Length: 165
Image (cartoon, rainbow, N blue to C red; front, side):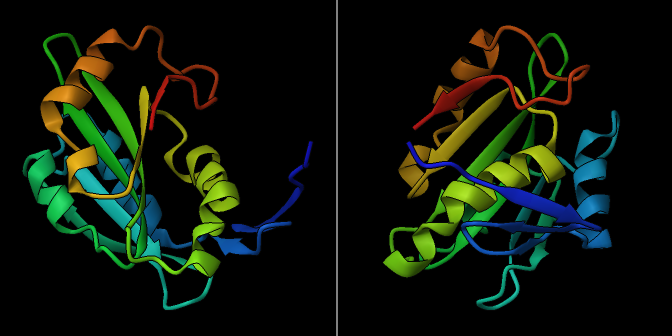
């Protein structure tokens, strides 16, 4: 069994999978906007600055999941946060995107970075989707998962929920 180690230093996380810098104020503001009740911002897409481990805000939007999906690139790794509004209360979806065109040498980052992004950036979500192409992001199918997701992780700060692959 392999073990992952990490050390946090003011937004920088050093892990055995490579360093990731989660300290962007723009990223924090975008995620908070998605979380804020009544906010028009429904989603945020994050990516890397070039081939570095520094997270950056790619785009935010107030439209449906289809609009978010349009921002995801085949040759890139993205992390997205979507407020899925159902009949009871807002629920949140964390999307870990590894486009089919991402080089094999970069794909491994998602194993460690994706976990760090979930814990340090997204923090609270009901469903995690691991996606490779647009077909993996069918809104009706995701909403079924959201509706069936039992508890939330609001109080614990843990990334509990349903993981869909």
